[in-house]
Image (cartoon, rainbow, N blue to C red):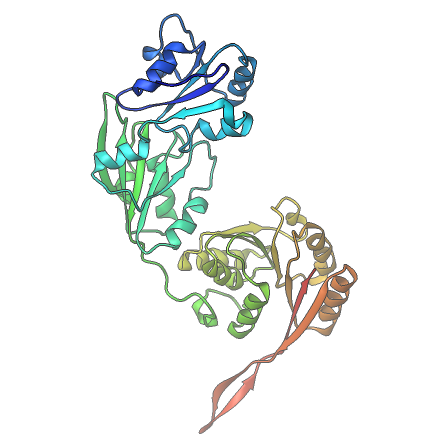
Length: 405
């Protein structure tokens, strides 16, 4: 028996068998009940069922009920598992809330699928307009074997998830789907991504991705011929390695790559940190196609490609924790001004320059903006044949400028 308090909000999880005995007692004693229409059959006739959506209105109505007796909010499964409980904990005093959970939809799905779930990752796609691959990628990339439960919605459904995975070149997964759990049309099935991409599913479902993706090999200091590029417009492997070290690649956050060219710096940074969001900015149409091809080749799906001129396209981007400037031309001064204003935290900002004029502009401007500046010259020579012998052939030296607060 629950020792009820005046004004307590009881958040009750409804399972396949309804409420627990303690939950049923709370429901009988409640002054007001909130819940989805599908729970109406269990609510006493003398207690009209009030809606839980939209969430903002629910919070407002619950606050209006303060002091008028105990209130019940009905929710599916465990209200603290990607449910309404998280919202209520933000909006109401801890001591005013009481949670009585039931079996979660993921537990129920795994039971029906006969799938152990102790090593399962759970993600929710409820209410997301986009970004399926963006959200999945860090978890797919960081595990040898994939086992991820997905809470879907009518837009981000198993069919859409399968389509996006196939479009991203991520094959080798099976999608298990448990539909209408506890309902009259409950069923389960296991499908290849190709099969699921052409199927329709019940709007109430839980999907589980399982299997092993065949990832591209390598990831750091690749030779230039490992990338699609035109006219030698690519950061040399040795310079790329110095740049990536200078950027102090974080495990998460946002990085800008301005003047991304072939995308080689972005791609290797993305491989080092699957949880990092990288925004590659490029204006040249041919190079944009190179970047797209290279992203797909190396499955670096945490890169967002932004087409357009810097600094114009930088304003609407999320603030960066790191910035690499690989090109800028006559707009370099304006780009720096925008980068300095938008940069979060201490940086760093890393840039490459070939001409002395660009080096001086970059180092002087950053120093005047209060940054500590470090400049290195990278001189690379590679062995090549000459007649019957071999010589070291020098590439143009490149200046690497690193600035931090």
